[in-house]
Length: 369
Ligand code: MRU
Image 1 (cartoon, helix red, strand yellow):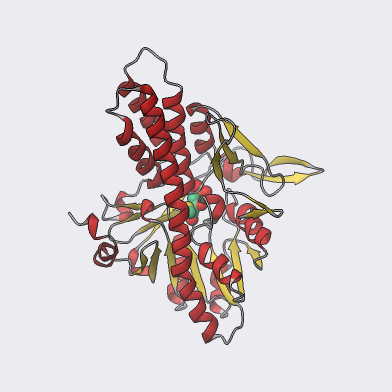
Image 2 (cartoon, rainbow, N blue to C red):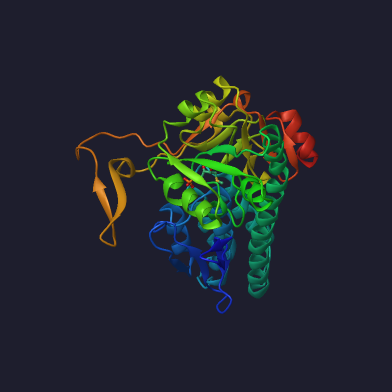
């Protein structure tokens, strides 16, 4: 996607130095656009854990490139398989909810674990990581094509008046490689000349909506309005939301969706107001081993300081401000689970389906045991 007219993806291998991974450092957006260079597995793990980058597909891509960098740097006395499995385990534990992390690490590991020749390992790890990036990019594009049909239908029903879409967190191109998941249909509709407008939840406490989604939509010229997290229900009651589209960090086989904390409340409000609630996700965000989201999706708990402090810009510098008493006790759950019964449909790279095991497996028959 374009940033000030220049084409960017959210992660890429350096053209001049194949031992360097470039990322857009999301900690500084929307104030500053900084590209960070990561050159080893420790830096990749730190970038994932402390959210220099975030969003399920992007975390997966970064982890895959992290394994590649670890292979590249292998020169210790430990046998290769022990070395790489230890690294893979640390990486997988860095953020527990997005299943893409496990998926990508296992994908690259399987390609290299039995290979004896070091040069061959490097070539295979690099190719595996690049395959993941390519697949995620293509899958988001396809999600966009399928999701577009929903927006086109609503636009016709509204006789060309703007289609109002509400989204939560950032499931845009910054969270993926390109296009985004929830935003892909929006970008496609906008590019086709369909009138759209996005209500962006600020998404406390990290404010991915306020800081990232508004920024990337505006960079592309898509009309959007930032709202506090508790505004969606009011807008829905007053006919100001036509469609809700969110992303997913881990969706179970029966269609329960783990996504950014607060998603569940939006689904409840949408149900109460008869508004379609869709989840856009690539198959890399489906956990084929789980069937009960509420009980089985691991929910990340993060540092309470993320809630107690707000971050903002003052006199050209980024500051953190304490907004509570310093002793205030905090609970900071990163994600929640929206039960399948509240979801109108899943938009995947293979098409739109109901959030049921039966319908998901119809699109992905190779996953039937
Ligand atoms: O904690 P984050 O920012 O890594 O959370 C991920 C997300 O941005 C969302 O939950 C998103 O909707 C799913 S990833 C496209």
